[in-house]
Image (cartoon, rainbow, N blue to C red):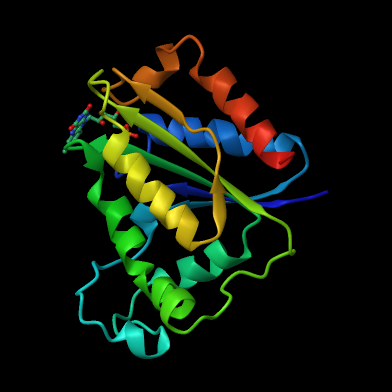
Length: 193
Ligand SMILES: Cc1cc2nc3c(=O)[nH]c(=O)nc-3n(C[C@H](O)[C@H](O)[C@H](O)COP(=O)(O)O)c2cc1C
C-alpha cells in the first residue's frame, strides 16, 4: 500500500543534524514507493499562539499565517516524521510554536466533538527524530512529552523515537556509527504498522 508521508524539518539549521536524519528517513520511505512531502518550518510564516481563546468558539484561529496550510497537510498525512532539536532542555521554539497553534484542533476535538482526521481510515503513526548537544539522561524528556501530546491530539500513534544525544555541531550526526541505519529501520517499521 502506498502511504503519504509528511516530514517536518523543525530546526532553524537547514543543514543541521535533525534535518539530516529526516532526509534519510524520507529517502527510505521514497525508496519503498511511498509518497513523501518535506516541509521546512523555516519556509513558513508562523506566529505564536496569543492565548486569546477565540478558537474555542468555532475552532478557527484569528492569526492569519501559514498554520492552516500546515494543518491541512497534517490532516491528510498517513505518516508523520517530525525532526527537531533540543534547545534549553526542551523543543526548539519553532517546533513549540506549531504545537501550540494546534489548539484549534484541540478545540474542535474536545469542545466541539468533531472528528479531525479522515485520511484513509487506518491508524496513523508518527516518528520523532531528535538531537541534543549534551548527554544528560533526561535531555529528551520534556520534548517527548510535547511531541506525544501533539501526536495524541492528531490521533497519531507515537512510534519508538530515534533520539541522539552528544550531537552538537551541524553535521556531527554524520559521524554517528548507527544513527542513519536506525532511522532507515524505524522508517521502514513505521510503514508496516
Ligand atoms: C539555543 C540553543 C539551545 C540549546 N540547548 C541545548 C540544551 O539545553 N541541551 C542540549 O543537550 N543541547 C542543546 N543545544 C544543542 C542542540 O540540541 C544541538 O546542537 C543539536 O544537534 C541541534 O540540532 P540541529 O542541528 O538539528 O538544529 C542547544 C542549541 C541551541 C542553538
